[in-house]
Picture 1 (tube, one colour):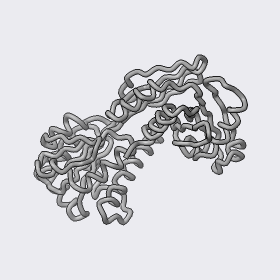
Picture 2 (tube, helix red, strand yellow; picture 1 turned 180 degrees about the vertical axis):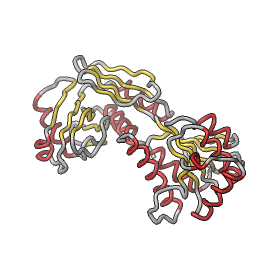
Picture 3 (cartoon, rainbow, N blue to C red; picture 1 turned 45 degrees about the vertical axis):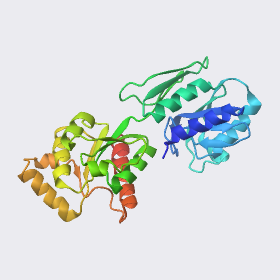
Amino acid sequence: MNNSDLEVLEHVENWLANGHQVQWVTLVRCWGSAPRPVGSMAAIRGDGAIIGSVSGGCIEKELTEVHQKESEVGVIQRHISSEEAIRFGLPCGGALELVFEKQIEKDQIDELIFALRNRKQVCRSLELSSGTTSLTPADKGQEFEFDGRTMRKVFGPAWRLLLIGAGELSRYVAEIGLALDYDVLVCEPREHFAKTWTVKGADIVSTLPDDAVKMLAGDSTSAVLALTHDPNLDDLALVEAFKLDPFYVGALGSKQNHRRRCDRLTGVFGVAESQLAKLHGPIGLDIGSKTPAEIAVSIMAQITSIRRLSKRN
């Protein structure tokens, strides 16, 4: 599953290669209700075809038609009031500011696609006054920036999922995680499970879980998911995660298994009750999920909620 940025870029690459005119649109500011976060982007082909979204689709098409009549300038900055947003077809209203680019370098698109396919982070900078663009390695923790003169958008995964175990559930979690633009790594020391791993873009590491957590998922941009259902592996990952600073720690199992796990962690490993408070178990939101795919949805919904809502506090 590709993330949305890669999908847009691949379409732009194809359209340019086939001689189409393309406009690149980026949402740089929003006020009030808005369906997409800043940094969201879309591309509009000369005949009106759209990929991606900065608003739900309606504003992109309407404004493209306006700008095609107005100017051939390479970069256009446009503020859309709440009233205009509703008139253009965005029912929730909210004011938006968009940047339209008409001059797109195919070589730069190719570089971005290569970086995303290889799970690398790149920052693309655009000077609005001149239309000059550049690509540089992204700084750790860097996010979308816009000061009215320069736009900086980071492409590539800034957040990481470390999955303990390469079973069926992990495959679904990895697919969804990749679509949400996480860097996904899978710790699987059991050779018979590692051999059957097929999710492209989610690499297997064969170290023991505690070492994997220590090396790969110790900071606040990482999540540790213990999914083997084997306490000999899951407990190693959890004990190490409690010592570090991942923003999310979760473990698979029923409520009864979770109680036994907590007793084991405190009684055998000496984990403090305050450390146990970090643990989400049973893992995922309670949405009545039964199948591995449904459980994966509940897990990624919970992770998304914790990651996004923590920024508001």
